[in-house]
Amino acid sequence: MMETDGLLTVPGGAASGGGGSRGGGSDGGNNGGCSRWALVAAVCLAALAADVAVRIGGASNGAVDTSSASVAASVADTVPAASRKGRYHATQFISFTINTLGGLAEFGECEGRSVDPASGSCYLGDDDIESDVNHRLAIFEEVLYILRNDVFQEEPEIDRDPGVLKILALPEFFLRGPNGAYSTKALFDSEIDEEDGLLIQLAEKVRELIFDEAFEDYLFVLGTVIAAESMNPDDYQKKPWEKELSDAHDVMYFNFAPVYRGGPDHKGTKQHIVMKQYISGADFLSRSKLPNPSDFDVHKYAKADKSKILAETFEKRNLTVVTDNYLQFDGIKVGIEICLDHRMGALWNNLRTKHNSDLVDVQLITSAGMSIERGPNPLKPGGVVYLSDGEASSAACVRTDSEAVFDPNHVCRGKPGGIQHRPHGGPGYTSFVGLSGCIDMERSKLLAGYYSAHQPQGCANTLRTYGIDVMDKFKHYPPSLEVYPTIELPE
View 1 (cartoon, one colour):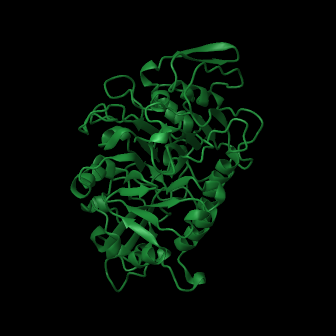
View 2 (cartoon, one colour):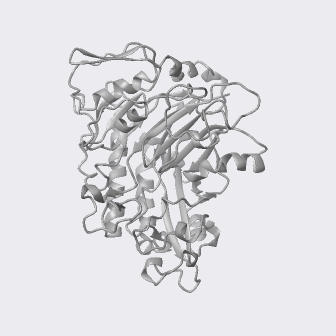
View 3 (cartoon, one colour):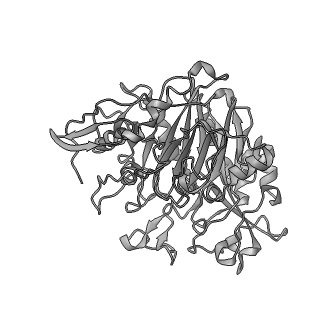
């Protein structure tokens, strides 16, 4: 790997909440110096400014020409802050970029674990579900600790402006469990707290964390939770993998993203659950006792109201179930999609059929193997789409045209089959926005055994999508918090 202990020079630049890179982990990133990922921040900033030179140890690494892609700087001037009514005039995106597809048997990461024959992957985590869930909560708590303490940094990554809505997203499958899904029984909300299901106990702890004053101006997309329940009404309280199941048609499958506002002011307000509609081949790998629905021609998730447990639990907990991918927060129109739903055009279809083809200010995608370009992005001119992906990295794209009619084959797409997160050159590709900073988590002791050292993720992998390789082939890829520049909201 390239050494990074030298001078970093970034002439010019765009307005953002900060810039640079530092190590995360138990010290909250305040380590008094650059981590070995300092190069990452400098090169990512190159995506925001023209004529960027990165120098390491006094030796020039060459210039990165991104004159066609310095979007963030120009977008900041597109809509004056005073022209918007409401609490917020801009958004800033933070992605916790961790690979959620599991370990790889070929590198010895799956010893003693069930391996999916097609992908050669296995679940990474604790086989004991309660221990696994609590450990993932601790990882999330560490992420929040880093963000909370960022405000005290001399050069913070996160915008301090209370008029900027900060959006923290986790990728799909962050909560999937060693059995391929959690039983909906884990989501049972009892009248007696001690009898609550495991995931309800987790949700209570998450709420305690995010209803802190430090997160008053945050919106959280907490990855996704995969759950399953027997179709037999007499067996709904049993765990689906504990009985003989030969067919996926005997099971109801669910995949949903909890979407919460942070801060004490939102403690008693309605929060949201966004349901995924379409099952992809990666959602249920053939490595557990739970039948893989893709092997049985089952391609749609069940609706929450079909469950004996979910609908009642969501109502008790003041959670609004979102089935049309559309939300509003403080006057901001937000579209949210989970992975394959984006490629299937779920948001755009619902906007056309249920919302008079109204366009959104912000589009959010949580996924594991998706990219912005592979689906329609129904944004207002000046609107932005953000993606946090559990297979590769994160991405952001601003709609820069002012056409009266939205063209789904042009906005943030370039070409319908595009798969890179930030392609190079070509029509429609100039509106992608690079990182403004990156906080790596290589010092975190909590991540050991919970992510693959050989699956792509984090700042280094995002740079690979820019065509810049800063990793040796056999070095590990640590998870990271990828921070994007502040983007003004459209009028």
